[in-house]
Length: 303
Image (cartoon, helix red, strand yellow):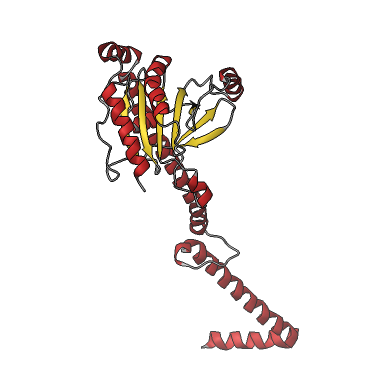
């Protein structure tokens, strides 16, 4: 009690000496010191428990920045994964192709040619029903004058009546992959032209495949087409044999048509919708020619 009385007496004496202004300053200093200590304590809590506090926008947190980066890296990661998957599929597809090509080679084709003369199968005796017929794959070809067009020409995509009027009802496609099959395709095409020379609803195409990458280069291709250009033979009648050339790799085209031996000739009779209604192989036999002509006549009668 005596100590407290002494302290109060001392305080009153100091106030009496320095005055009220000094007292006010001392009180302000005390408040300022208390505020600074409170801020320091709060900042310590802030950095100690940052994972539990919501930080202001001016102080970016590590967790927020990681989310930002992940958001922008996700599409890139997904793209890289899809690209990697696409490359993997392409590699597997190419491996399957190489394996397939190695199983079939020139010597295997030559052995078959010597065995049956290119007659790998007997031609259809009757027309293939429309419901069971498959579409002939689209093929881009070049004529000897350099014109590029696609076969077969069908009613699909022909909107106007004038275009539909030019669509053939029957088209014979003679495919040749090597020079050895030229005589085979001629054995079919010559009688076909003679039988339907007066029909404007029939087309005949002889297509030679040139799969060499060197000969498929644009400058060399143009030069080759110029060399292959011949004077048009004199043919009587409406139906003319049209010669075309298909450049480049046609592995998947051949695979779709199940063409294995490249030394023989392949004949396909198509209807106006581009469906295969008859097919023959190798040299034409008399009974096979008869079936080709009768099936073509049936296609001309179809509506």
